[in-house]
Image 1: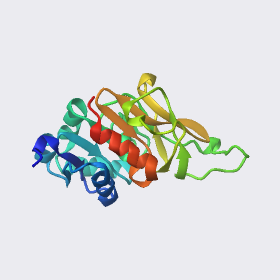
Image 2: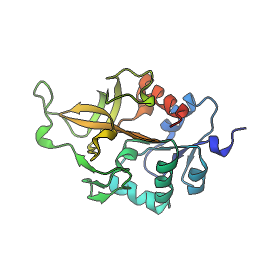
Image 3: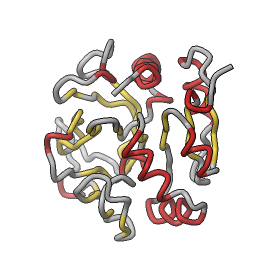
Image 4: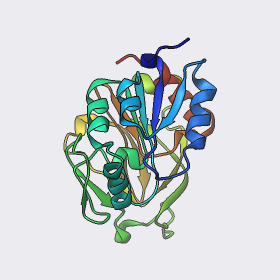
Length: 216
């Protein structure tokens, strides 16, 4: 039987249906136990942590604090393999233009809204915000989580805001939507991505599989 240290905790702070994240992880986990949990002790005892989310940043931060999860998320991001997904990427930054709300400050830099005046596609068409649908993720350097995934592979996005890291060395991928934006960051034991790997077919499953086996 797997020890608690072998568990993968998916943090549930009440924002979004986490079943698709759980199902995708179970599919690639080779029998490792996947738990969806709002219990800080379970998160603290897990071997690796997935921090997903969807919705508005102010609501997400409020619910995270209401469940007493802030400090355990910051500690997990400091000490164990940690995967942020969508809002789980944005919450790692210092401040969001969405509600002018502070984030967790794990990475330096703001979260910005797509600028309306630059939402023009390659053929001159007006691009909608939120950015919704499939788009290319271009790797910025190599990383173990990109193993077996083509540079420029398409992933599924749903978002109106993007992170703008102060430290450009942490950028792990970029995507073009009117402007080039940071679509993944990585540092030490943390990898966080703006798209939804659990909704991104084989490329997404490959990324989750890489995370499950990653030993930073």
